[in-house]
Image (cartoon, rainbow over all chains, first blue to last red; front, side, top):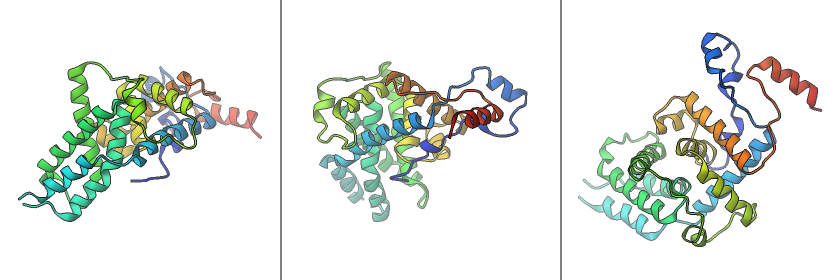
Length: 75
Length: 183
Protein backbone atom coordinates (compact mmCIF):
# COMPACT_ATOMS: atom_id res chain seq x y z
CA UNK A 1 0.00 0.00 0.00
CA UNK A 2 1.48 3.31 -1.09
CA UNK A 3 2.01 5.78 1.70
CA UNK A 4 3.09 8.91 -0.15
CA UNK A 5 2.00 8.68 -3.74
CA UNK A 6 -1.55 7.91 -4.65
CA UNK A 7 -3.34 7.11 -7.83
CA UNK A 8 -5.55 10.16 -7.52
CA UNK A 9 -3.26 12.48 -9.45
CA UNK A 10 -3.06 10.16 -12.42
CA UNK A 11 -6.74 9.74 -13.02
CA UNK A 12 -7.91 9.82 -16.56
CA UNK A 13 -11.58 9.09 -17.16
CA UNK A 14 -12.39 6.17 -19.41
CA UNK A 15 -13.53 8.63 -22.07
CA UNK A 16 -9.89 9.49 -22.64
CA UNK A 17 -9.02 6.03 -23.89
CA UNK A 18 -8.30 5.78 -27.61
CA UNK A 19 -10.54 3.80 -29.83
CA UNK A 20 -13.56 4.06 -27.61
CA UNK A 21 -15.79 5.81 -30.08
CA UNK A 22 -18.29 3.03 -30.62
CA UNK A 23 -21.98 3.01 -29.82
CA UNK A 24 -21.44 1.81 -26.27
CA UNK A 25 -19.15 4.75 -25.70
CA UNK A 26 -21.77 7.04 -27.18
CA UNK A 27 -24.29 5.70 -24.71
CA UNK A 28 -21.93 6.26 -21.83
CA UNK A 29 -21.21 9.74 -23.09
CA UNK A 30 -24.81 10.82 -22.91
CA UNK A 31 -23.94 12.30 -19.52
CA UNK A 32 -20.45 13.63 -20.10
CA UNK A 33 -18.53 14.06 -16.92
CA UNK A 34 -16.81 17.31 -16.24
CA UNK A 35 -13.15 16.88 -15.56
CA UNK A 36 -11.26 19.18 -13.30
CA UNK A 37 -8.11 21.00 -14.24
CA UNK A 38 -4.82 19.64 -12.98
CA UNK A 39 -4.38 22.32 -10.39
CA UNK A 40 -7.81 21.69 -8.92
CA UNK A 41 -7.12 17.95 -8.92
CA UNK A 42 -3.82 18.49 -7.18
CA UNK A 43 -5.34 20.79 -4.59
CA UNK A 44 -8.09 18.35 -3.70
CA UNK A 45 -5.58 15.54 -3.49
CA UNK A 46 -3.39 17.62 -1.19
CA UNK A 47 -6.29 18.46 1.11
CA UNK A 48 -7.47 14.87 1.18
CA UNK A 49 -4.07 13.42 1.99
CA UNK A 50 -3.40 16.12 4.56
CA UNK A 51 -6.63 15.28 6.36
CA UNK A 52 -6.10 11.54 6.11
CA UNK A 53 -2.49 11.66 7.26
CA UNK A 54 -3.49 13.77 10.25
CA UNK A 55 -5.73 10.91 11.33
CA UNK A 56 -2.99 8.34 10.78
CA UNK A 57 -0.51 10.39 12.78
CA UNK A 58 -2.86 10.53 15.78
CA UNK A 59 -2.00 6.97 16.55
CA UNK A 60 -4.33 4.18 17.52
CA UNK A 61 -6.24 3.91 20.79
CA UNK A 62 -4.58 1.37 23.01
CA UNK A 63 -7.69 -0.78 23.28
CA UNK A 64 -7.60 -1.52 19.55
CA UNK A 65 -3.99 -2.67 19.61
CA UNK A 66 -4.69 -4.65 22.76
CA UNK A 67 -7.63 -6.30 21.04
CA UNK A 68 -5.49 -7.65 18.23
CA UNK A 69 -2.77 -8.84 20.55
CA UNK A 70 -5.23 -10.44 22.96
CA UNK A 71 -7.18 -12.24 20.28
CA UNK A 72 -3.95 -13.27 18.66
CA UNK A 73 -2.90 -15.01 21.84
CA UNK A 74 -6.00 -17.14 22.14
CA UNK A 75 -5.95 -20.81 21.36
CA UNK B 1 -4.96 -22.02 17.00
CA UNK B 2 -2.86 -19.00 17.86
CA UNK B 3 -2.58 -16.24 15.32
CA UNK B 4 0.55 -16.37 13.22
CA UNK B 5 2.75 -13.52 14.50
CA UNK B 6 3.43 -12.43 10.93
CA UNK B 7 -0.29 -12.17 10.25
CA UNK B 8 -0.87 -10.45 13.57
CA UNK B 9 1.80 -7.87 12.77
CA UNK B 10 0.29 -7.28 9.36
CA UNK B 11 -3.04 -6.58 10.99
CA UNK B 12 -1.47 -4.24 13.54
CA UNK B 13 0.40 -2.38 10.82
CA UNK B 14 -2.85 -1.77 8.94
CA UNK B 15 -4.84 -0.46 11.90
CA UNK B 16 -3.71 3.21 11.69
CA UNK B 17 -4.75 3.52 8.07
CA UNK B 18 -7.85 1.43 8.65
CA UNK B 19 -8.85 3.82 11.41
CA UNK B 20 -8.12 6.85 9.23
CA UNK B 21 -10.39 5.38 6.58
CA UNK B 22 -13.10 4.79 9.16
CA UNK B 23 -12.87 8.35 10.47
CA UNK B 24 -13.02 9.71 6.94
CA UNK B 25 -16.11 7.62 6.22
CA UNK B 26 -17.96 8.17 9.45
CA UNK B 27 -17.02 11.76 10.24
CA UNK B 28 -17.07 10.79 13.88
CA UNK B 29 -14.24 9.46 16.02
CA UNK B 30 -16.36 7.31 18.32
CA UNK B 31 -18.25 5.64 15.50
CA UNK B 32 -15.00 5.10 13.64
CA UNK B 33 -13.38 3.38 16.59
CA UNK B 34 -16.42 1.18 17.05
CA UNK B 35 -16.32 0.32 13.39
CA UNK B 36 -12.62 -0.54 13.52
CA UNK B 37 -13.15 -2.69 16.58
CA UNK B 38 -15.98 -4.57 14.92
CA UNK B 39 -13.85 -4.99 11.82
CA UNK B 40 -10.95 -6.44 13.77
CA UNK B 41 -13.21 -8.81 15.67
CA UNK B 42 -14.72 -10.07 12.47
CA UNK B 43 -11.39 -10.32 10.71
CA UNK B 44 -9.73 -12.25 13.50
CA UNK B 45 -12.74 -14.56 13.81
CA UNK B 46 -12.42 -15.38 10.13
CA UNK B 47 -8.67 -15.16 9.79
CA UNK B 48 -8.59 -18.59 8.19
CA UNK B 49 -10.29 -17.11 5.15
CA UNK B 50 -7.34 -14.78 4.57
CA UNK B 51 -4.77 -16.15 2.16
CA UNK B 52 -1.27 -15.42 3.50
CA UNK B 53 0.75 -13.45 1.02
CA UNK B 54 -2.25 -11.67 -0.41
CA UNK B 55 -3.25 -8.08 0.23
CA UNK B 56 -4.01 -7.80 3.95
CA UNK B 57 -4.94 -4.09 3.87
CA UNK B 58 -7.39 -4.69 1.03
CA UNK B 59 -8.93 -7.59 2.94
CA UNK B 60 -9.38 -5.55 6.12
CA UNK B 61 -10.64 -2.49 4.26
CA UNK B 62 -13.21 -4.68 2.49
CA UNK B 63 -14.53 -5.93 5.81
CA UNK B 64 -14.71 -2.45 7.26
CA UNK B 65 -16.32 -1.01 4.17
CA UNK B 66 -19.00 -3.71 4.15
CA UNK B 67 -19.72 -3.20 7.84
CA UNK B 68 -20.02 0.53 7.28
CA UNK B 69 -22.43 0.05 4.40
CA UNK B 70 -24.51 -2.40 6.37
CA UNK B 71 -24.68 -0.03 9.30
CA UNK B 72 -25.51 2.88 7.01
CA UNK B 73 -28.42 0.99 5.51
CA UNK B 74 -29.75 0.41 8.98
CA UNK B 75 -29.30 3.96 10.12
CA UNK B 76 -30.46 5.50 6.83
CA UNK B 77 -28.46 8.57 7.49
CA UNK B 78 -24.92 9.79 7.38
CA UNK B 79 -23.36 11.22 10.46
CA UNK B 80 -22.30 14.71 9.59
CA UNK B 81 -21.06 15.80 12.91
CA UNK B 82 -19.67 19.22 12.15
CA UNK B 83 -19.30 20.23 15.76
CA UNK B 84 -17.79 19.40 19.03
CA UNK B 85 -17.10 15.72 19.41
CA UNK B 86 -15.48 15.50 16.05
CA UNK B 87 -13.40 18.61 15.89
CA UNK B 88 -12.33 18.76 19.49
CA UNK B 89 -10.96 15.25 19.55
CA UNK B 90 -8.53 15.95 16.78
CA UNK B 91 -5.22 16.30 18.51
CA UNK B 92 -3.27 17.40 15.50
CA UNK B 93 -4.06 19.58 12.56
CA UNK B 94 -2.53 19.14 9.17
CA UNK B 95 0.56 21.25 8.97
CA UNK B 96 0.10 22.31 5.41
CA UNK B 97 -3.50 23.34 5.77
CA UNK B 98 -5.12 25.99 7.92
CA UNK B 99 -7.70 24.92 10.43
CA UNK B 100 -10.56 26.65 8.66
CA UNK B 101 -9.65 25.07 5.35
CA UNK B 102 -9.34 21.69 7.02
CA UNK B 103 -12.79 21.97 8.56
CA UNK B 104 -14.25 23.17 5.29
CA UNK B 105 -12.76 20.22 3.48
CA UNK B 106 -13.99 17.76 6.05
CA UNK B 107 -17.46 19.24 5.87
CA UNK B 108 -17.49 19.08 2.09
CA UNK B 109 -16.30 15.48 2.15
CA UNK B 110 -19.17 14.58 4.46
CA UNK B 111 -21.61 15.95 1.91
CA UNK B 112 -20.57 13.48 -0.76
CA UNK B 113 -22.60 10.35 -1.34
CA UNK B 114 -20.93 7.54 0.57
CA UNK B 115 -19.97 5.59 -2.56
CA UNK B 116 -18.14 8.59 -3.96
CA UNK B 117 -16.53 9.38 -0.64
CA UNK B 118 -15.21 5.88 -0.11
CA UNK B 119 -13.87 5.65 -3.66
CA UNK B 120 -12.07 8.96 -3.36
CA UNK B 121 -10.50 8.07 -0.02
CA UNK B 122 -9.40 4.60 -1.09
CA UNK B 123 -7.66 5.83 -4.22
CA UNK B 124 -6.63 9.29 -3.15
CA UNK B 125 -5.55 8.79 0.43
CA UNK B 126 -5.35 5.14 1.42
CA UNK B 127 -3.13 4.44 -1.54
CA UNK B 128 -5.01 1.62 -3.21
CA UNK B 129 -4.96 1.06 -6.92
CA UNK B 130 -8.15 1.42 -8.88
CA UNK B 131 -8.26 -2.34 -9.22
CA UNK B 132 -7.96 -2.88 -5.47
CA UNK B 133 -10.49 -0.15 -4.75
CA UNK B 134 -12.91 -1.80 -7.15
CA UNK B 135 -12.42 -5.11 -5.38
CA UNK B 136 -12.96 -3.51 -1.99
CA UNK B 137 -16.14 -1.81 -3.16
CA UNK B 138 -17.42 -4.75 -5.16
CA UNK B 139 -17.77 -2.87 -8.44
CA UNK B 140 -16.07 -2.37 -11.78
CA UNK B 141 -12.91 -0.31 -12.17
CA UNK B 142 -14.75 2.08 -14.45
CA UNK B 143 -17.32 2.66 -11.76
CA UNK B 144 -14.60 3.57 -9.27
CA UNK B 145 -13.05 6.00 -11.72
CA UNK B 146 -16.40 7.61 -12.33
CA UNK B 147 -17.11 7.93 -8.62
CA UNK B 148 -13.70 9.44 -7.97
CA UNK B 149 -14.16 11.91 -10.77
CA UNK B 150 -17.58 12.95 -9.57
CA UNK B 151 -16.36 13.21 -6.01
CA UNK B 152 -13.54 15.53 -6.99
CA UNK B 153 -15.83 17.65 -9.12
CA UNK B 154 -18.36 17.98 -6.35
CA UNK B 155 -15.66 18.84 -3.82
CA UNK B 156 -14.25 21.48 -6.11
CA UNK B 157 -17.71 22.97 -6.42
CA UNK B 158 -18.36 22.92 -2.68
CA UNK B 159 -14.97 24.40 -1.90
CA UNK B 160 -14.99 26.84 -4.79
CA UNK B 161 -11.77 25.39 -6.09
CA UNK B 162 -11.31 26.55 -9.64
CA UNK B 163 -11.69 25.03 -12.06
CA UNK B 164 -12.81 23.09 -14.97
CA UNK B 165 -10.40 23.95 -17.70
CA UNK B 166 -11.33 21.46 -20.37
CA UNK B 167 -14.45 19.79 -21.60
CA UNK B 168 -15.36 17.22 -24.12
CA UNK B 169 -15.14 13.49 -24.15
CA UNK B 170 -12.74 13.03 -27.03
CA UNK B 171 -9.00 13.32 -27.32
CA UNK B 172 -9.14 15.58 -30.35
CA UNK B 173 -11.04 18.24 -28.47
CA UNK B 174 -8.71 17.98 -25.52
CA UNK B 175 -5.70 18.28 -27.80
CA UNK B 176 -7.08 21.44 -29.37
CA UNK B 177 -7.81 22.96 -26.00
CA UNK B 178 -4.42 21.98 -24.65
CA UNK B 179 -2.63 23.40 -27.65
CA UNK B 180 -4.60 26.61 -27.64
CA UNK B 181 -4.48 27.53 -24.02
CA UNK B 182 -1.15 26.50 -22.67
CA UNK B 183 2.42 27.66 -22.86
